[in-house]
Image 1 (cartoon, rainbow, N blue to C red):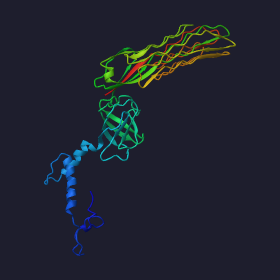
Image 2 (tube, rainbow, N blue to C red; image 1 turned 60 degrees about the vertical axis):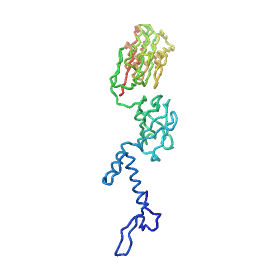
Image 3 (cartoon, rainbow, N blue to C red; image 1 turned 30 degrees about the vertical axis):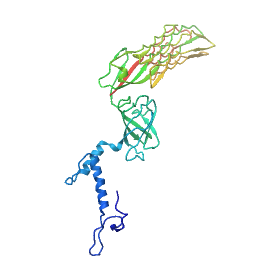
Image 4 (cartoon, rainbow, N blue to C red; image 1 turned 90 degrees about the vertical axis):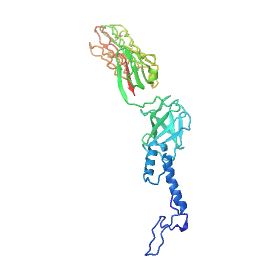
Amino acid sequence: MDYPKSVPSVGLVNGKFVNEDVVAGLPGSLIPATWGNSVTDELLNVVKSAGLEPSEADATQLLQSMKKLSQAGEDKYATDIGAANLYMANYVPAVTVLKDGLALRFTAGNANTGASTFAPNGLMPKPLLSLGLSALRSAEIVASSVCSVVYSAALDSWVLVYASGGNAVSGRLLGVKTFTASGTYVPTMGMKNVLVKVVGGGGGSAGIVATVASQYSAAGGGASGSYAEAWLPASTVGASQVVTVGGGGAGGLIATDAGAGGTSSLGSLVSAPGGAGSTSLGYTAFPGTGLYVGGYPGQAAKGGNIVSMAGAAGSSGISINASTLAGHGANSPLGSGGVASSAQGAIAAPGSGFGSGAGGIANAPSQSGRPGASGAPGAVIIFEYA
């Protein structure tokens, strides 16, 4: 649509229509029938595309049509023509430049199986991120689902803000349920997805032997429990799940090994074994060197589709020519381990956070034997999303 510049007899001035100037003897511009008809037809096309019946008496139809078409968002919606994990769509008018905050919708042709990209109108594909700003995981988009994406210039990526039928985070946080003792998890009404954090119990620290003159003893720290994080849809969680919280490993009695932490789990979906306790290894005679190993981590957690990891080993205790240091308890992702103590007569420190190991203790010459401390119990923490 433009002025009829190609018609030399129209009489445009600077490319626009002018009125007749009787005083100066200048004729006014002409409006060719072809141009008038084309302008009218173009406006009528807008009115008809909005589903309105053209009326000579209604001077508001163009405005009505623009509002209706804008609400329909036809210029912001298209059908995916790409492949799994490589989403592409052509919009009319074409998207030629990516601007911060640009919002588009498309119907996905395929489910995603992992990290994915999106590209409108043949532009360079950019990563598709979840609302957590991480790469998409499997099944966050399902075939034939309607997806809404927003471009972030700061991230140079598309953020998936909604995917019908998929497992993407699309709602608000409903609440957090923290289990520090075994029980049953019953989802809150309206829950669609959960983020689950599971840590096994921490290992205890061993008890140390009594010493005589020129003898030293120490204990390593307990290991932390294994850890897992999982994103699960409501369909996987079901109506309820049994929650098991692993206890902390018992501290060893005098000259006795410590116990291992118990396994924490959410039904059969996610489980995290506990960490091992440290071992009682007798004494070191001066002058001499002794190494008192800490507890070993258990097996790696299972069921975590975000994180599945084994715990950390407890620090070793050491004795070198009368200098003795006990081992610290291992930290877990949800808490700090017990601090090692080498002070005369000190009591062993238990783990101070979910799933952390107990701290060890040490003996100087001529001290009585002492028991170790317990590791911290595990936990199951469930974040519910609408």
